[in-house]
Length: 285
Image (spheres, rainbow, N blue to C red):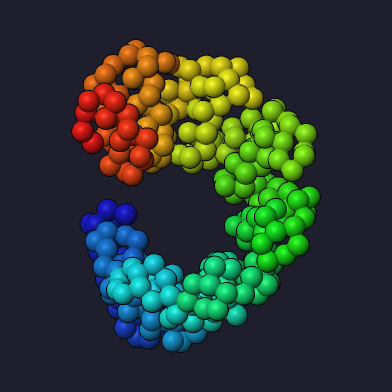
């Protein structure tokens, strides 16, 4: 939202929030947290006021701010406290975040069995990330007895609901034939293509890799380079792969300057292979 449009809305929310209305307090905090001009410290304070009145969404958002260190010092323990309150009220996002904290022992004693319970509660509300997390637990045998087929069912449920990471995991399983499953290249391509249709940069990059290498689809390096270029705005590996295309003249005209530019962009984002590629060309990151 442009700053000019945000000001009248924020002024109206502030007036209502000052009356002690918890929904207005939460909305004001969200405006401060996500719309320009942002003020994360003020957002945290308004979330706190709404959360103390039992507002579940505010409790969840406040918990996430403490967890991530947004608007102030990071405090996992306080974050988990607020996430647990929101989760107990049935907020599915909080249930998933609390499950994550329990699964990895962040701000709370590690308890994967309880994590699964919270994921299951969120999944019953249709939360696709909860479904994916349950699937991963069964696929990897973490906190539960390993059950590949059960894990696949949960991953597919998440993918059918639009979870991009679940789609890409399915694609990988179908492409590699994991756990003795028969390879299914058409299914691997379909799930990668479907994931890319969401606009997710990683998925677009993965589709580009398929076309570049002719995996699961007819080889088309020109299209691969186009996909890398689309993904490169947000995906760091796409920057590196596009650099390789320009370095080697694959899918695009060979251009050393363009290769160096994309390698540098990737190197600045922490891709070590890009640093090595620059060194091989006698260039600094």
